[in-house]
Length: 132
Image (cartoon, rainbow, N blue to C red; front, side):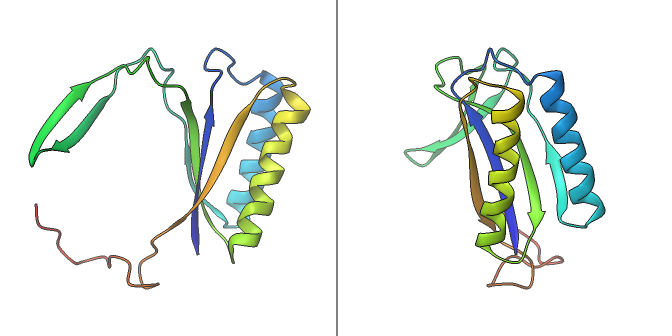
């Protein structure tokens, strides 16, 4: 099963410490070598631009960012191939423990979500064309 981890924090001014970045790098390297981490990335700080594409009253609209009114900042994401939710939560706990050890006082959330996986549970298959 594929899982997506989304890390958010209500403290956008508290970026990761060098020690945390090093520890997360070692964790990511281990997970990539084991074939469990498929993708990882982070987003630019909240002051950077962004956009929201919305449908309201049946009409498409675009709202340009930045979205400084946001209460939380998405600091990054990772996609894993794991056996089940139990393994996914255990890995998320290990990742968040790094924050306790290397960034005392930081508060945030690591949300774990199951991703649709081609060939599993009716997910979109490669080669099927989407219609806009």
